[in-house]
Image (cartoon, rainbow over all chains, first blue to last red; front, side):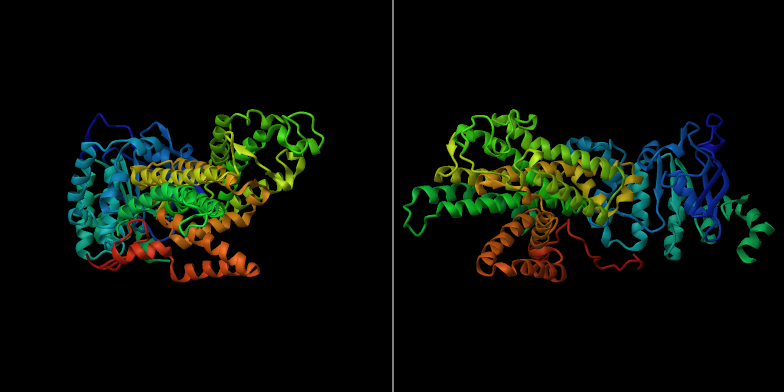
Length: 254
Length: 372
C-alpha cells in the first residue's frame, strides 16, 4: 500500500521467524514465518485449526512460543514482553468475539482505549484533555456510532459492537492492528461497510486481518497469506493464491 | 432516585445521626421516651463499623469483581492495633499492676515488652499502624495474587486461607497478642473512660464520620477515570490488558484502599465492643461481610452499608430470640437474595426507576446478532 513504497521505511514492522507453539503435544504453530512491512495490510486465511488465533496470541504476548523469533519494529522482542507492554508498544488487538465494556457507555469505552498514561495515578487524578475529546468525536464519526455515544455498549447490535471494538483500537492509535474475524455474524451490508472501514484504517496503520469470508477478503484487495497446520502454505494476491493447487487441496480436498 | 441523590441522602442522614444520637443520648433524661441508652448507642456504633467494612468490600467486589473472603482479617488487624494501644493505656491499673506489661504477658511470665508492642502507648503511632498493617498485608498479598493472575473463586479461596492462617496464628499465646483471650479489659481512650456515656457517644459520631469519609473516598474513586477502568477490568479483564493497562496495578490499588478502610472500621469497632480476639479472623466473619454486601446490593456502596446495618440488626434480634437458628436464617437470607434479588435491596430500588450504570446492563431493544 502507501507506506510500503516509502523508501525510508524499509525495516519490517512485524517479523516472525520459525515460531513454534505446542499445547499438550498438539502443534498449533510449526515454524511459522511472516514479515509485515510498515503500513501494509495483510489478510490471513486458512482452515480451522490452521493456527491463526495462536499466531495473534504470540504477537500480543498471550502465548509464549516454544521457539522462534518475534520482533516488533525491528527492535522489540515480543517473546519477552507481556500483553500490557506489547499493547503500549503499539499493537492493538480485536478479538473474534466482540469484546467491549458492556456496562460502560460507548463514549467511555473509547475514553478507556484512548492513548494516555495507563498508570493508576494518572487515571485517578489526570485531567481529560481536549485532544482526547476530539479523538473520540473523530472515531465516533468513523465508526458511525455518533448517535449511540451515550448508550451502554451492551445495548449495541452485534455489528455495532464489532465497530466499537475497532474504534477502540483506533483510539489506542497502534502502529499495528490485529483484527480477528471482524465480519463473523455480520450481514452483507455490514461486511461491505467493515471492509471499507478497514481500508480507511489501513491508510495510516498496519493491519493484519484474519478472516474466513472470501468475499470480504476480496473486498479488502490486499496481499493474502494462507496458513495451514501451523505454517505458511502460500502467499500473494488473492487470485494467485486461490488458483494454487495446494491451497485448493487444503480448502476443498482431504 | 438516582445513585447520586441517594448518596447525598445517605451522607446527610449519617451526618444528622452523628449529631442527633449523641444529643439524644446525653441531653435527655434517662426516663424520657427520646433517650437513647448508652448500650444502644454502642450497638448502633458497632453497626456503623460493619457498614464501613461493607463499603470497603463493595469497592473491590462490586466494582472490580474481586470477591475477597478475607476482609475480616484487615478489619481484625486494625482492631488489634487499636486494642494494643488500649492495652498499654491500662498501665499499672491491670490485675498485676505492671506499668509496662499487659496482664497476659505478666501471666505468661514475660519480662520485656515484645518489639511489636513498642510505640503503641503513643496514640498517633497506633493510628498509623491501624492503617499501615492492613494496608501492607493487602499490598503484599495482592501483589502476589494479582500478578499471578489468580482470579474468581480461586482468589476467594486464598483470601479465606489468609484469614484462616491469621486466625490460627493469633490463637497462639507465644505469638504475643493475647492468645485466644485476645485483648480486653480496656480502661480508657486518650485519657477518657470508655465506660462513660459521652465517650460512647463520641465513638458513635466518629464511626458515622468515618463511614461518610469511606463512602466519599469510594465514590470519588468510582467516579474517576480510574473507577471506569476498574469496572472495565471487572467486565472484560483481557480487553484491558490488550489495551495496555497493567490490570494487576489497577486491582492492587483498590484492594489496598479497601483493606485500609476495613482496618479503620476495626479500630473504631474495638473500643465500642471492648474486646478483640482471634475469633474476629474466623473465615465465617468474612463470608458474613460478603452476605451483607450481597443483601444490600453489590456495586452500590450505599446498599452495602444498608445491607450491613440491616443484616446485623436482624442478627441482634435473632440471636436474642432464637439463638440456635441464626445461621440457618443467614443462609436462607443469602439463598433468597441470590435467587430473587441478584442486585440486592438497593439494586432493586434503583433499577425500578432509573438504570444503575454499574449494575449488569440487560440488552435493550436490539438482540445480539440482530441487524442495527
